[in-house]
Image 1 (cartoon, rainbow, N blue to C red):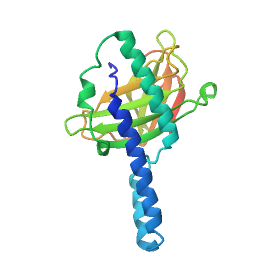
Image 2 (cartoon, rainbow, N blue to C red):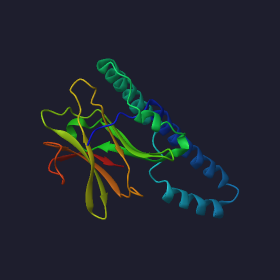
Image 3 (cartoon, rainbow, N blue to C red):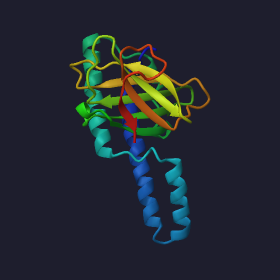
Length: 207
């Protein structure tokens, strides 16, 4: 599967979505002081519905800033304009439907982190994964993203990390099915990009 470079706008949209989620939670907390019973019920529903969205703003800022550096390096090295898919992904923050923080599970890269999100602009949908601080791949090695649902793993695609890219890696996958349903996200380091089941060590997992 060919990797598609995500748009600059998407990074701001993910950040805005996280801030909007934090603001909604804060407003719910204030309102609970005047109507504790109804507010508690609403907050419980909100927590279940958007359990992935409250992401640390500081972590996102670092991740997205690092991604900006990575994008600039690619643009400078390739000497070409970004692909048209970036324009298709230029959507309001409200259309970032899901934001899932990812944490490192590799002892040698304990400070690494990432985020996965779903973007829907009304015409097309993309599943986008960013990681930062990942160990570089070598030879045929590739990071593979897995979606886990009811104990069954399905590959969402692969990406590689160069040894001079600050451990930055990005995967963007078009969503063709009606729903992209999963319970958890895992990222493994595989010997190549051709596997249909995990063979390597798990490097990242959803929080």
